[in-house]
Image 1: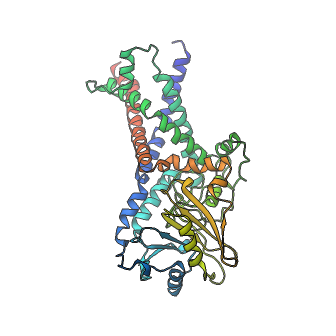
Image 2: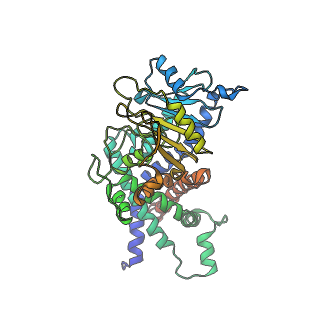
Image 3: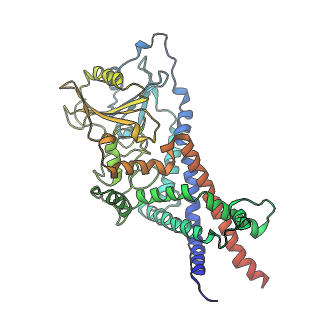
Length: 430
């Protein structure tokens, strides 16, 4: 049999699919489990909603909430306030976790749906590190990274193999539309081609953004393509970006904290810079960097917060339409309070405003980490994180990502079925 270029691509596609199929299936299943984490966590914490009094002006300020938490021997590292009057105030206690407080009475409502949090934590670590298999994290991360790379090859080679030799209506119909009359090998071939074609573009975006979060070279390439200097490398395995304590995606995507999306400084860590000891948050979930699970609790005496409410009131007046405001305690005594004001969904960094509140000067200062002030490389890197999950486009984008994970499962199944019939059915017939 003469080895043509087409046959070379076909056999490479087949062998790569058999090698990486189980890994792709694993990442697809785990990705499906965490796809609607934001909505499911909101549902799981629905009992934390509070009754809004007739006089909403009785709502406590951040200063009072901090005082209430300190009275319970808690040391807040960050606070998140929501515009929705029925939602509780979220208080982060460094690595100790998250507590919710009634914004009108100051009552501690507990830590919310911890079992759901642990479930998503485990599913996320499975997605990134294959942790449920008993493998060490660096090994699991290397496997999922290589799996993503080979999946990209499968996608590109699959499009080449799909490409009709003759652009006729019958050929296009067979390659673009499902045929419910087919059975066996013909059905598997039809499904494999149709699903592969229609999911190819969003799947390619998911793969490319996954590579950016998995490998230093891919992350740096994004910066170099925009003419920007890549961030300093973090310590980690050669060729791969250092993994944080957990969180979906690769490349140190942090753990979810209690509030809205994370800040640009936290994103800079996920780009590869910053100290590995600094707290990471799952899915950009906490407030400003260092807040949420995995954030560091400020050391030393309690930070003075007198005057914080007045500056926050000015921020709320100047930025109408805000959905949440997250702040963290200063890292140095007397330093400014970094805050993040979010007007969009969890995965829309362009709708965030980063500010610093200087209590000593009674000033509201624009943060250098504000999205509009970042270079193009950092802005694209932040977009890549949420393009991977679809959150950049809200619920619609998340649903497209879910359809891609389902498509990946079907591609693995039909691909294995075609290979089984090629090798084993043919052998039994002989």
